[in-house]
Amino acid sequence: MTATPLLEVRGLKKHFPLHGGLLGRQTGAVYAVDGVSFTVNKGETLSVVGESGCGKSTVGKAILRLYPITAGEVLLDGQRIDNLPASELRPLRRRVQVVFQDPFSSLNPRQRVGDIIAEPLVNFGIAHGSELTDRVAGLMDKVGLPRDAVKRFPHEFSGGQRQRIGIARALAPGADLIICDEAVSALDVSVKAQIVNLLSDLQDDLGLALLFISHDLAIVEHLTHRVAVMYLGKIVEVADRATLFSNPHHPYTRALLSAVPVPDPTAPRNRIILRGDVPSPINPPSGCRFHTRCPFVFDRCRAEEPLLRDVGDGRISACHLDEVPAAA
Amino acid sequence: MSSTLLDPAVAAELPDVLPARKQRGKVAMFAYRHPSIFAGGLLVSLVVASALFAPWLGTADPTALAPAKRLRSPSEIYWFGTDMLGRDIYSRVLYGTRVSLQVGVMVALFASVIGMFIGLTSGFIRVLDTVVMRVMDGLMSIPGILLAIALMALTRGSVGNVIIAITITEIPRVARLVRGVVLSLREQPYVEAAVAAGTRVPKIIWKHILPNTLAPITVQATFICASAMITEATLSFIGAGTPPTIPSWGNIMAEGRALWQVKPFIVLFPAIFLSITVLSINLLGDGLRDALDPRMAKKI
Picture 1 (cartoon, chains in turn cyan, brown):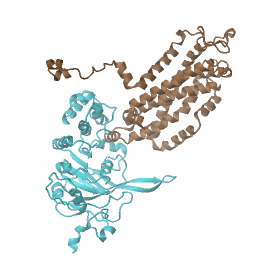
Picture 2 (tube, chains in turn purple, yellow):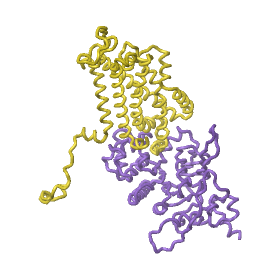
Picture 3 (tube, chains in turn green, red):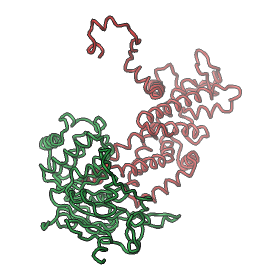
């Protein structure tokens, strides 16, 4: 942990302005990501989990700078990349690649598989001519695609195979970090397992770091090293896998984990049923964002925003309850 | 397949429960699957053939005057009759096909290419978008035929000028369509993945955006082609289009208008040709739309 982390995100904010009225003035904003900090070390998997709309995909896209961020810093190997001009950012894009959720819309329907995988290699001038062909073939072997797929179009493949194409494209430029944005959520259960295993194997072979954005806690438990739990644009808890899954700390994490189905009908279940819906990120609640649904809510939660602090076991959590026993 | 699954001896004893599957040729299969492309395509190719081979299809000089033989009804010699100057209407209608097709195809081509360029630019350069699209809105707010008449009034009547005038009125439709498609394609994950993979903007447009706009543009081009033919005929009919020395369907109809009640065939034949041509091109366009974009077909 003392070495410079591969990726560091500090106080990342992404607000999408809302325009309304006749003149299109800004009338508000969607606070999609509102001050998120975390690190990903080399060869490590960090999972970002949370329910739909909590901003986890926005974090991924903001790191890739698919849109400008509102505030905060993104550092790759200790170097800030969020404020670089496009020309200086381009060579660094080699190192951070992405695999998207939908294997159907993430591949250009009018490009051949070989060209899709070769695109980053050509862009970064990594390979030409016969070397390019060899590289593409090598990548296809690595992700388990048949060699004859080169000349075919994406629509000729199943969802799992398409996701392999997407992974090959992400591996092509020799990335250090792959952002998997719900990369297995759209797949069948059996195919999901294959892709997850492929990602784990690739991580072991190539020393890849993965930022695994997902809502599927069972998959996350299977492959991650650390987990960051997000709620309404903020991180509420970060912990190692074993710590988090065996002993969730933050009230939201507890509720989230209790919702995971257990494949044993006789097992005792203490489901924590949260009341109400997730508040709108356009008008997030004051104080702790979770206070409208938290079963342990008290006065301070409504007024003051809890900060992330170390609560032992290499875990950080943002909850006022952590301070209560010390004070009492 | 069944023979590989069944023992041939057993298979022979089984009664034929199902009727033999109908064997269709490739052409029949295509006609069955895409009836409107087939019908439209067939009619369009007939029209194109009659324009190309007009000199060899038993026509006379379409501009040759024969005052002695004027206003003959359709007969064995004059299939579609003659007009008030004794010109053979059959020949004039066939040669008129050339003008209509020329105008239709050229307008569709130019309007698509220019409209695509404008649409791509304003879809990608957001600063230009507001200005360019307001100009397009302005153009679209003027009825197409009026704009074409105004443009024709500024210039000399010739086929080339007719093409230019109609192209200008059709450009906004293509530009709007392409801009819409570009805006939705820009948000596609494969475009975002290309950005992450370091693809530069020109290559993104060329490799990822452009190929995916071609299908809707092709469909739109057929509709523009049909609409341009009608506009050309209208312009010629009111005397603001193709000069009267060139036989075009609009001109023939304009000349026959005065005699409509006594000699209806002068107007009738070019009108039938125009209707059939426009119908067949629209059929082709409808079929292409269904084949290229099934989702869009359900919506409309």
